[in-house]
Image: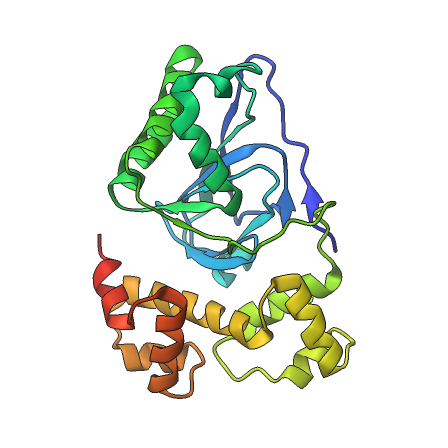
Length: 288
C-alpha cells in the first residue's frame, strides 16, 4: 500500500481551511499533501507517525507539518474497536504558501516565519507556553470567519517566531521519495514494530514477514530508514518510554522493561544516546 496523496477539500470563499475531524477514530491513512498543516487533537489518544518519527498523541497535542511530509494519526485500540468512552476529535488547519498571493512570503516581515516553514519540513510538535497559547487560538477558530480567522492564523505565525518551544520530529536524514510512495513492506515493518516493540523482536521473524532474507532485510531497512533496524526499534521504545515518564509516576526501571529493554543499563545508555540526556533528566524536563 502506497502513501496516499490527498486532494484536500477546497472552499472558494476562504483563503485557507479550518475544520474539525470527528468520529469513532481518525480515518485518514498514511498520506501527504502540498498543504502546510496544524493538527490539534482535542480528544482521544494514540500514536502518530511523521516521516520516520513515531510518537504519541493525547488531548492538546499540537503538531505543525510541512508541505509533502508523509504522516498519519493512529488511535489506540479502544477507539478502533468502538470501545472508547469518547469520540476522536481534532481541529485541523490547512494552508498553502501562496494562500494570500504569490508574494506574501517574500515580504521582509515574513523572513523569520520562512525559517519556521523550513523547519516544518521535518514536522514539529509544539511545547510549553507556545502550545498553550496556540491551542487557545486554534480552539476558537472554527467559529470564526473572514478577517478574524486570518488575524488568528497570523497570531500563530508570530507566536512561532518569538522563541517558540518545539521538538522536531522526522530525522534530519529523512528523505522524501520523489513520488512519496510507501510500499507494502514499509507498512508491514512499521506496523509490526509498533505492535511488538515492548517484547523481543527477532530479525528472522520480521524478515520472514516481508518475504526477505535477514541480510536483504537489513540492507533494505537501512536504505529506507537511514538507520539500522536495531537503532530504529530502540528509537520507538525510547519514544514510548518518554510518554510513560511524562504521563505516569512509574519508576524508570519499570518503564525500561515495559518498553522492551532487557536491562536498565542498556536502557540508560540507549536513552542518553538518543535524547542526549538521562531518563531522570528527561522526566524532570518533560513537566512544563
